[in-house]
Length: 498
Image (cartoon, rainbow, N blue to C red; front, side):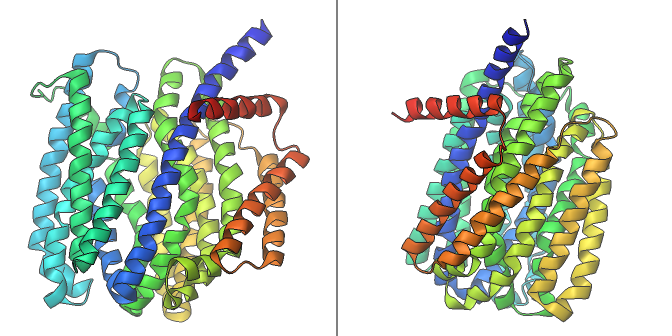
């Protein structure tokens, strides 16, 4: 009987692992395209214009989650287990029309405030005001694009989800190159983002509506969705403060060039988020079903597996980026950006703590205690702002990185403490220690190799991967069941790509 249960659960977790593997593959492709975008923008625009674009982009990133009203997460939490097509259609379309109205409202507000933002944030009202007005439409397109893709995430149609993500990134980067060649500069970059969003929306909605049909929504359950989603709105805004407000403070205390240097280094650390995003995509709809079905053991296993997967890849990535910071920045940008290498180890370490927040916050989603997210993020954001104000004038961009590390560390630790009051699972401390030891050995080998050119950096990365996983096996980081799962997944991938 026990053996049968084990085989059944292994089959389920293999399916979950395959979903993560599929989404990871898509996000690897997207991240590679973003890395291609980094040298394109930095070398074409230079530090000053790239800093201006960064400030415009983080402004859009701040407002877009507010315009979504938390409805993307509400859709996943409420409808992931729904099978009634009419209820799915009503819920989805009522949320889409609501986001459409909210997105239009915030776009108009940004247009009306364009002169103020151009003068106070960008410091150049004459040359930047029209860019802010044009970028305001990205709030609407980004919000609707996110919601349309959420449809496929909710119902685990991950091949469609992954295809749309990669397609959107390919089109965006391709259009950026075209517009920059035509002399578009920042305006061309904005047009590229808008066009890729619109195409993604058109394709996603055509597929979704073919599955469920179209009918004007009656907004019958919108109140319940908003009741769940609205507490998440300040969470998104506060998280933006932690992740992006340092760019504004660097711009205030320093120069646009310093914003560009810091942003390029921060962007490089997003390779760690590459491993986090698949968890965000797959975990919530999966554990929503198991939790609502009353299967607490399965829910705990999914959480444990997700955190172990995340740390298995994120810890060596943080070590590797710290060692390869200078050669990577030299290859991907120009010499004026290389000084940003000093902040990468600090930011990378902070993102590891952020990973704990991203996994454990799902517990608060499950138990519908989303108000705790606002409190936790508020504490972290207040700490981040205070430290930025204190440290940037004294330490420059290093001060901003120290503030980011401390803010993320406090956020991760506090989220574990609060979420475990409601639901506990194994955090896998012993595996984390083994991963750190293996990463230290890997980093030492890369440091001794001292890579510089493109070929040497690629060799160093491949060598690091081999050393890390060899050390994990030597340290017995996986049990027999996990090794069986990984081997079976590898065989599945091999068959899938033949």
